[in-house]
Image (cartoon, rainbow over all chains, first blue to last red):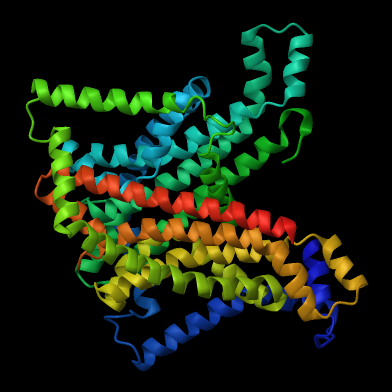
Length: 276
Length: 273
């Protein structure tokens, strides 16, 4: 029995026995439950907007938002913003990941020299770096690349350091017994063992990069998804704001899922079959 | 669920920042790089090779720092920021504890609210700011709402996870001893879930600090340490920008360090209990 089931069993011991429904009905009910709250909120939104309880200036009716989404998608505006944002994340994330891998590897060697400074710099959030970088490189694309790269770099570097550090002693000993050279040790033992952790870092790095993209575009840009949000806000077009938020959320979610799936595959193929 | 996993990894990431081995004897090594960097910086600005108003000298930064500290401007800005952060943190954490406990203890509630919450959490926090600014204005109310949201998410996730992952063996013991539901909750579930709950609160503290800076950036109105940074940036005062960054980093570090110290103490206390 899982902990969860056990716990609910204990906690529900003296709760009222639920209505006994036949199995198909129960299944249907179980499947429907998660949709209850969104459906209720959506209904409330529909009715509220229809009855004029809330001014459309403050909360536009859902059909407005849907329409705006459709307009964005068909007019091609959306693709312009999405591709701009993707290009920024792509470049920033690639640079950040590469530097993070290098830095993480380097830190394994000279940890005592590098890690304290790295830690100190990590304490400063992306938004605090923004004015600094802004003054140096201006408001153009490099600003976005640098900040997104910085956001991706931190988790990648830390996980790289961690990944190389956690090679089990037993595996190292096996390598020694077989008389592996240093190169072989690294290529055949340390690296394969570190890969899943490295990938976790890369995935986290992407999440951070995507978040920073939105932040950076909110503060300083003239196109892109974050800009779309600001633009809608400035024109008081909340339907545009909401549509953009939905798109940002959906893209972030989809890519995160994709990376998660990749990560799970990697973990399953971990040498020695050691499950995490 | 990707969210909670990435949150707990966030916690792991924060923890991983600590070196594994005690580095007491080699602590001076950590100071080499900053010392070299500062020396280089001082040298460059003294030699005046980079002809740019942006390369301010270390002395200038120190002068600005002294001015900000002595004139009281730093304390006003920092005080405003911290007061806001504390309010948002408290509201967010309190509601997060309630919501997390409900999700963890009440399966029906979890089935109804859980999926919606997980979807909500996927949306980048900062994307809410434009909506919040329309609904709550640009003042302190909007900022506190935003900070509460920032603090709420990690607390909910970790509280609910902590409660769900109470070892079944413990629950079995409670059942064997014929504990009542209340006793089980107070004496078994709560102590077992406490470390996870603490992780959530700790993350909430960090997140709400980041969100404080974000809120001051994106909901520009009023005073705060974020506004100091913006001011520096707008007036091309690199010294003020560097000083502001330093203060923000220092406050974050202090929060991190004190939460970690508290966590160690808590761990020892629950270990003894």
